[in-house]
Amino acid sequence: MGGGLFLGYYYGAYVGYLFLAATQHDALPAFSTAMWTVVIPLTVLTLLGVSIREWWGEGH
View 1: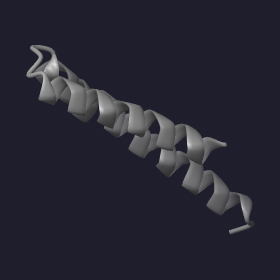
View 2 (view 1 turned 45 degrees about the vertical axis):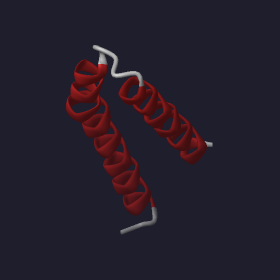
View 3 (view 1 turned 180 degrees about the horizontal axis):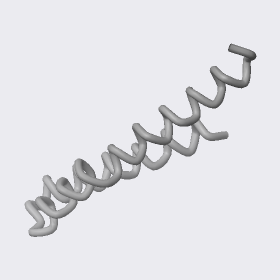
View 4 (view 1 turned 30 degrees about the horizontal axis):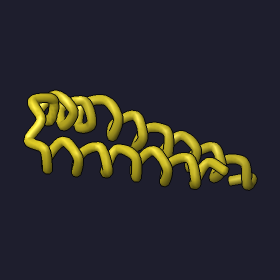
């Protein structure tokens, strides 16, 4: 379930980026900045947290 959710929101972000880039929309720089400064770091932290929780849950 969680993997599908990540895949879905990254696909949506990618399609949004392609749309903004193809139409040369004024919101493209703000979208890119938001992705790099908020969304991607939160995703990395979430994946790291889940990985650590799974690793410690195995009895290590």
